[in-house]
Image (cartoon, rainbow, N blue to C red; front, top):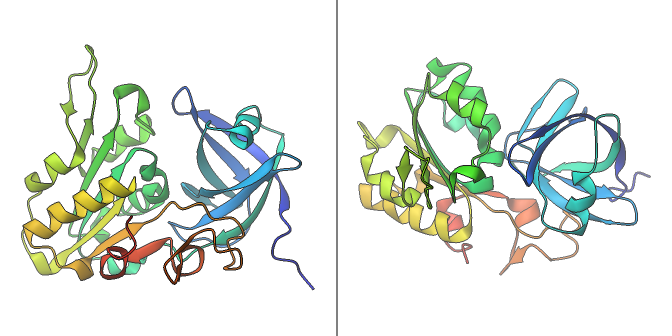
Length: 263
């Protein structure tokens, strides 16, 4: 009988620095995935944590991990050819079929870009699958910007707005909270819009309110939660909000449900 809590040993294929503390790890992985799902990453005798999958392909996944504690400090030292332990994938992922032939708007704050990066790449690689694509990206400062090379590539096909909360003397782009730029999004047909919002809870709350002010129906807004998920199989209750197990029913929720969960 298979034990769902036992992780599998997986080889690190590549390591790509995004910022001073954010690194993307390309790791061997053969399970089927959907954008927005997560895996449990562990190092023996150190710990385990849920990590969003930022991209995937044949035989691999990518995860962008921030160095913020004991476990991620250990992961930070891994090099290509080293091993980490994975179990999953878990969660429901984004319903990308609902975004096809629609005006897709994605608003991502900070590391919230990682869970939607695969969706951005999916439609950027076949832009005719959407009627229109607006991408709003917000980071704390220029040094916190993730996936800089991909962002330059996305600009070729996507209406992309990049902003930072705190500009420095060398920054010549937009500055201000991502909510400031929501009213600038031109919506031609409200029936065609699908909005995806991922980021810190306060960012998701107020960004969703801005889209509601524009007239976007709640049913056409999607949010994704980054909770402290421990077992990831609905047993421990660490991710539970009221009666909802985020690890099982999420982390992606339609806003009609998600608005009750944003704390």
